[in-house]
Image 1 (cartoon, rainbow, N blue to C red):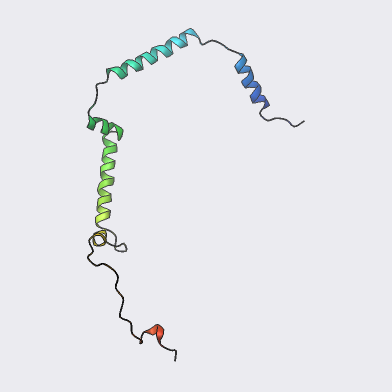
Image 2: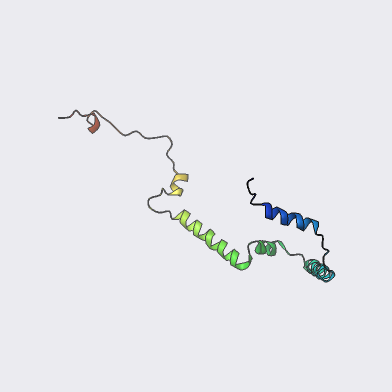
Length: 115
């Protein structure tokens, strides 16, 4: 019969379900006192305004500073694009419509016969 690797673990879980030791009274009182303290601290907080809540949601002034720096860097990179990328301003405000065809005559290199 193959040995079940989880048999010891299953045995421990079964034994833990059967042993129903009550929570010690001192521990239960400490848990309830801590929960009451946390509840009262939540009630004592004054309601915050929109900007204070926004500041808290971005992890304080450090988070807002990082967000501002990233936003400014994004605007700077977007407006001064590297040379190998097309300029976004010219792409948005270009006046030409359609496409242009280069003047091609029969003297082009790819149409010439080899010598």
